[in-house]
Length: 246
Length: 246
DNA sequence: CGCACAATTGAAAGTTATCAAACGTTGTGG
DNA sequence: CCACAACGTTTGATAACTTTCAATTGTGCG
Image (cartoon, rainbow over all chains, first blue to last red; front, side):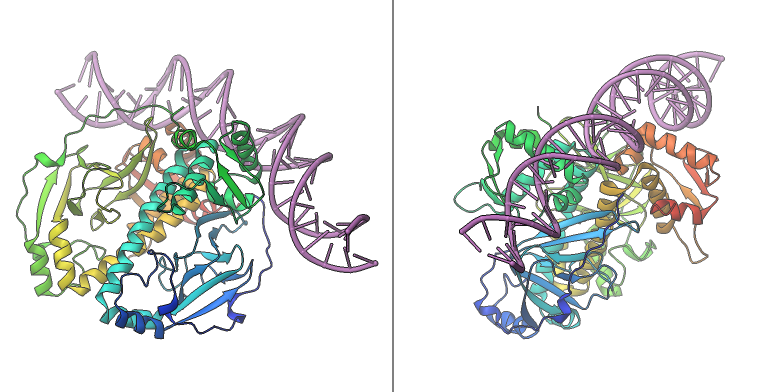
């Protein structure tokens, strides 16, 4: 119920850096994935890359949605606000993630960088032009949005029906899954967001997040060597706790 | 934290009724909207309509997603379950709404009819074939999924950050908005779902929903002439309460 | 008409929020 | 390089909202 006021520069003031898509090797989730060389070239022509520092507002809820973005490095938080300042994170973005899918004429949420971040920016109008002649691209977008919707529904289950401990465990697991490599499950997780960001993502307060993490540490399920980094020391127990199997 | 066990027949046992799309005049949100006559004909050929009674399970979470549906009459509830039976509604569907958008190979949620309901069923495989040759259709789907994602994010804000009273008011408003006609805002709302369905949609218990509705009645903001029907008697106040402007 | 189920109401308990203070960490400037 | 300020995190005590448990009332249907 507290109100907030955050000072953050906006992305408008940053000059784009030219860098063609061909050299971009971000994950398979990106928009560019599964496009032919020719298509990629066309996509490249309507995009420009830019670099921003920590705490920069990328888009603002309700602003006209003129640009879409792909995160190529760093991380981003997405959130919605109530009139009195209460905040709900709708997601965190990492390299390969797409920003701006869910919009009509205006953005449905705000976005801010969590650390120094690189973005690939697309003009929305030009992208829509391209969609008309590149069916592959539209299909790719449809799959990406569908995936996001599934994740959003999982988050509804979390927000509406899970306890604080289940929420925190589920959150850590989702970070681990997203970062998972071919070499098995990831136990060392990067936490670029603060406790209050996590709280606003899980529908909890900063204090409850902190207390819950302390509990998990005492149970030897996780370790926090340094802030910004977390290690899962008992994955199975974490999985069980995330769904209330205890 | 209570567990549930519901007995409901499944839709598999119902024989389809043949009825071409041309005669179907459901709302602009439907999949068929914005298709040419020819396209509509093609869509018609891969669909069949069916009628089910109240309380029938249409799809089951985790089942292979072989069919998609359009609701043409009645209403449907969508939900996800935790292992111990806790339930989260992810949405309610009314005529014109599409069922099955958010899925990979399996359904991400279960669906059950809230009353006698008519559905238009599409084979997923055939629909995907059709998508390849009807770009309009794919674009339409993309817009529909994007809209759903925006709604899902609004629901996250509700579940994570709103109070019980704000949740209930927001819910009533969303029903009113969805039913809104050209003749202005709708104040008489149909409530085909039970209190516990509403609770599971808002992350509340049956009792809290009931208490909150009673409060709103005492404040002369709503009236409930008969169960299954609700009237908004002070729309502005309801709007203010929904966002905590009080 | 009465049974079964849904909705309402009440009292008590519990989880999480709020308020407050101490502790750590980070980054800056002397 | 250390000291200090600013900020984020942790911890504690209390309060509040919602849940849980229980009982009553109301509604729909056979």
